[in-house]
Length: 71
Length: 253
Image 1 (cartoon, rainbow over the protein chains, first blue to last red):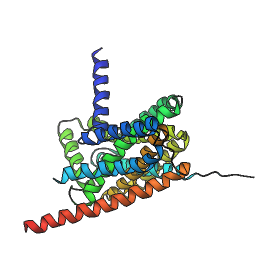
Image 2 (spheres, chains in turn green, cyan; image 1 turned 90 degrees about the horizontal axis):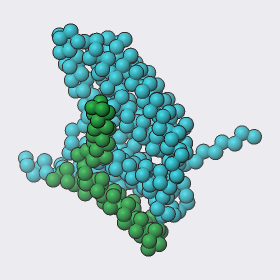
Image 3 (cartoon, each protein chain N blue to C red; image 1 turned 135 degrees about the vertical axis):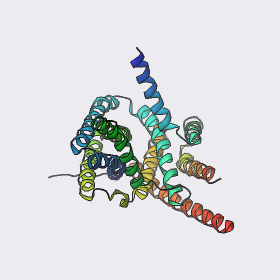
């Protein structure tokens, strides 16, 4: 049982390191982008707007995260 | 008539998988060569081969299962993972190119591995540690390749193409790496990393958009536009960060 628990812990740690690592802000930014895109595209019906908005948000998240390191 | 149907998305997928695999394998090969030249080539090759076999089993085990997941759900999850992963790669590559963060130094990694092996040898644990180091080096770096192959391949329903591309990249890097031996620090790793980051973020945006019914103009061809947009944006960001860094250095002097 302890080997299984250790294995599961290591698996969980790997995914946390993989997705969060030293940049939790990028994970939160992607989650926010998903929420906003789903809202605009699926609920409001502004899918065309998302064609422009989604890439701009991605670049915005990258810029903000890189600026955080610089400061 | 032999009809060859090559989509732009296939070409980008092949480029992304090839570059991602090459970057990770250069990092893994540094450790394998350190083990081979310091301790034993046999142990180094055994460790690397065992890791590659384990990674291949992972692809074979999870790949077909992923193909059974409904496409929209798969693309939403995979697209999100690729966005996070790609942004992390891009951020690191941009900061390194702008001179804000130190570039990865394969020579330093090589030296670290040699020191660790020498200490193990002094304690009579050389062969065992050599095998473990080679295995861990290839397995941990390869795990990111497996995730890239599985996510990109399954979402595009081109798992065979992605896996074959990765295998070709592994063989090519191994052959070239062993020929040039310790000159891996000459590989333009950071530029390759930035290219992979651009492609991962492009695929991530595209599939998230597909799953959420964004309606990309031109279908798959929109991927090319996304790659161009993200590449241009990274260039502008890189220039801005590099200029800022130079100004701060000048202000301090």
